[in-house]
Length: 328
Ligand SMILES: [Zn+2]
Image 1 (cartoon, rainbow, N blue to C red):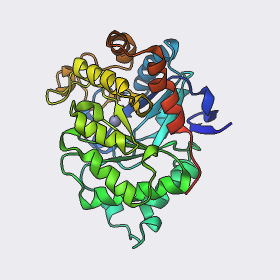
Image 2: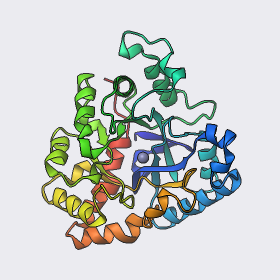
Image 3: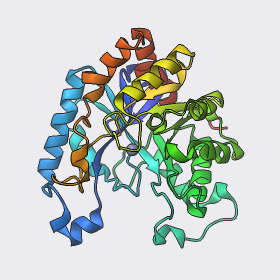
Image 4: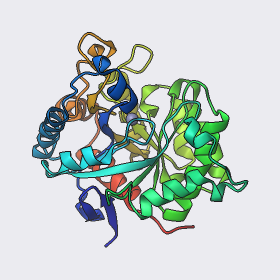
């Protein structure tokens, strides 16, 4: 039986159960944390870890077995904290490698000598090392490869990351999961660049596609074989789709035969440094790990989505994606 790498070691693919495919646990900025602690909310590590455990225990009690933590470097990935959380909650947690930026790599990576051949780019080597050997000295191996495009589009560094991710994927068989700005249809740019590097697009989740109701765009992504993330339930920015719109789009896609290419998630994080009360994040009262269970799944059923289709999106599609393929 194939296995998937998690924080607690290898788990058989058929034991992944119900999976939330795009979440976070901690989003921190360690430089700000060290030097401007007055800006940081909830600076006690033990408290942060215990609150994350409590939130994740509730998920497990309510039938969720696996969470994919899409926190790549650039978002404050810190595996020892995730390990500490997992020691207090019986949940499979899959962690990510890759790099999260909308425009530039940090100087330390940008100035590192780069090979002419993407396959030998230092980024490719770092990502492969995280998958094969583990992250830092944690012993935890990455089970997802993360990259981004946002408002600036495909900048030179973003393109370099996408191509390095493509090669790390082809060398390891681990699936690719992305961040996009749906409004500029940048998922199509991701597909083009990944395909240029020979990536099988059925091994790619184009994230945050659920932010839009543009069915032409969504179907263009799906028709090239990728899975789309309707993965920001609860994060209802004014410029993005509402709960009702997201539910209507998922129900329509299911009725059109795309159920095998949709995943559902929140893009929530138990802790965000910048989430102190009275800031931007107050605007999302439904954003929590249990919004799908409390509100979204009932609304999807109401809209005609069957139990079998929900299982496909929450169990079968994640299992297919998370199970590493052969290198190619
Ligand atoms: Zn995310």
